[in-house]
Length: 307
Ligand SMILES: NC(=O)c1ccc[n+]([C@@H]2O[C@H](COP(=O)([O-])OP(=O)(O)OC[C@H]3O[C@@H](n4cnc5c(N)ncnc54)[C@H](OP(=O)(O)O)[C@@H]3O)[C@@H](O)[C@H]2O)c1
Image (cartoon, rainbow, N blue to C red; front, side, top):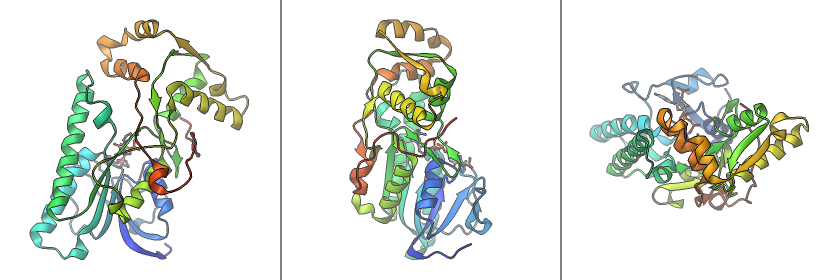
């Protein structure tokens, strides 16, 4: 294992086995970094891994100095970390044994699904809100800066880890000759995993750059249909014979589209609502490039994942 060459505070990383976690490891490759998770990423030296299940009691002697960054589900992370932080507070641990900052991913669903009609999405919003409050209060009690990021649709590939949303749509388009879509689709602001990782690292090192929860998106805002068209154009550019690039996107009047989706309602209410959400605007979030002070990156940012 090469010794760290960057003397910035060490990083404790949860959710390393995600595209964002892998991208963060890449961005912070010169830094001291430990991964906490259930499985050691295949390319990580064993001494950099601490086996940790967020739903079980923490392993003893977990080092908390440095900055904490998480891409794991917030409803697991928040009670786990809050318990650990309360323990350090009660022990009167030295400042060097306390985190300098905590950056954790929640989701823009907290905002976009708050009026959802189905019970699953309602429960998700409650779970995320509760977790955000738990983590913020635990950090506040020890005066540790806590930055909650609420990303929207995360896509892309990093370190062999792939997203499970746009890659699934690409696969679907590769299998279907025609894909019906509502004639007017809503806005999306997808964010690449590398952009999310870069913003997370920035806020871990400079938490003063943002105050309160950060609803975060990519640099481009485009309709759902335009997002699929750009994915298709990109697939054709890589390979003119790519089947995903040849799928016909068929605009269907809204009333007919609702009728086609209606059979889902009794047995898959969550999927039914997800299909109807194609018409909703889920955008207007802070752009990654405005925080990073970098040029805007048009959609799609590479590398892309294929399902
Ligand atoms: N995907 C999206 O479009 C989207 C949108 C908005 C917000 N988010 C949020 O952004 C973050 C990244 O999303 P994602 O979809 O890439 O990942 P995800 O599926 O939400 O999270 C998977 C990661 O969490 C870890 N994890 C799960 N349960 C764990 C446990 N009990 N103990 C330890 N680690 C555990 C997994 O590690 P193992 O290797 O141990 O399984 C894996 O690294 C998450 O916080 C997610 O809620 C995602």
